[in-house]
Length: 259
Image 1 (tube, one colour):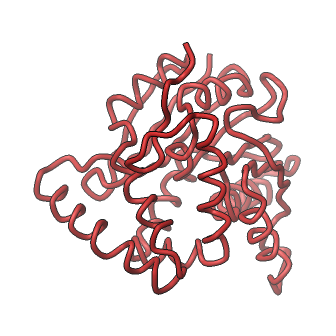
Image 2 (spheres, rainbow, N blue to C red):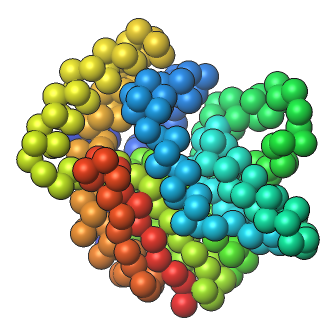
Image 3 (cartoon, rainbow, N blue to C red):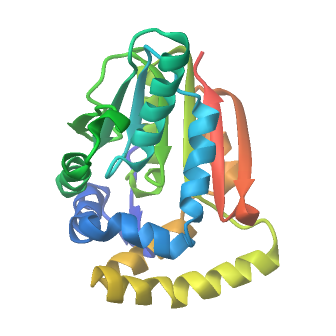
């Protein structure tokens, strides 16, 4: 059954419109996206991403997909991890493919590569423009799939999860890192006060776009909670699904395997 409506922040929109609306948001904030992540999370997003990369455990010779990979922040962690393992044990270099629907985000990520002084510390990434709901990759071609802070922006989460399952080999690993629901009322109240009052204000000053960060805050509130996302993963065919909460459930890591 087709979706009747899709959420864009607190608005319900025609599903056919959501992708363009989301692209518009990220077009406007791409150049300051990484800086805003540091400011919004107090640097915690780096620790969350490190934990997700460790859980995915990228290995030499693997094909790893970083979906909705934006500026490649997560992909660089995965590539460096696989490269460190290759230096210790040998083997072929891993291939880390960044897939993102937003050309501005990809451009910002690729410009970061071009400005690095020592390219040897940043193994090359493959950049693809593509939709999480129609991945430009063959069936059963990837060893691992990661999506960090991107799943809430897709129009149909179930379709995106099914696409992830489609491209993974049997035994392939799936990791999703996303803002989620705080597990206690105290944390939830503090987080609500901080995110609704301060994050849009920061967006207005730093990224010069209050509305974009108002959308980001609202999109988090409408994203499925930990249990519901785990159930959606199982419906898509993943097994061994587990959830790890970070910072009292402000962020959650979902993991599963393809069969």
